[in-house]
Length: 385
Image (tube, rainbow, N blue to C red; front, side, top):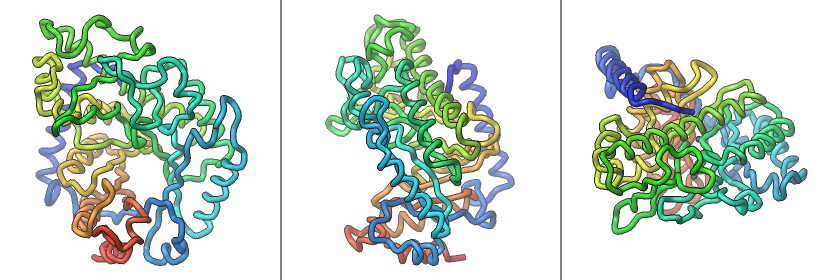
């Protein structure tokens, strides 16, 4: 796709980011990266139906993604679909035999229906509405559900092994580290905070308070600190859970460009009423506190997953935070992009010396439709000096 974190901790993270940004401005080039550094491994995200894998490898594609679904693997509580797991293992073997490095997305964000049917298993906002936009379970606050996820994780690596270039985690919608997106009404966020389900209530430091109700701001601050810290703890749990079975690189997926300590302070003063820029965009409600999240990552064995590499500002912020921790970056574009966005993403991947960049997705690259960047254009871009 981990953080009981105080305001003082976030302040320290912001200071570190500013210092690193200043240093990069002295020693770097362009927006702070390098155009002359290590060349990334180039990848393509599937599905790969109809794609000649040997030809794809000859085009210079090094890395591919094996995607799974928890719902497909465990259709009933404790009953795993052996045919599905065998098919996933065979697919991974076939990709390796074709010469690719394989990244695994084991699909924790695709929860089985028997999990989602449990009381409190879905994210719930302050209005009592459940999130049903994706089949994602509330594993942020549903601590009692986590052993079930851990059982699935253990089974994945027991069946598929550990021969992966990296394993992706995030656990939220789209497999990223995130709360659900607020609903959009008339071009702005509906100001949904997803911490009011029955499994979230016991930990809430201000259980009777609701966003945008009167306070002296203390309730808003205590709630928001807890809300962001809970997602940080979720990050840490995912890394620890995978690490029990997998010794290689764990890539945490971070969406968008993140929020700042200034955004947090403005929202607190607003009593989380949705009137600040970070709330109107929905980034605050989704918990995009990347400075705190990346600051809390282990010193090794992890990578920062940048999911918007076609946006220079977004990748600049994430890559700068990663460099402050000396952590590698694995990137991808936002998807459904044309040739210009593709070339921009390839340029940013080189500039920030990413270890790997994966283009999203193969069906778009091969369809010759809708103005999407083609596989030929992608091949030309990655082969250019």
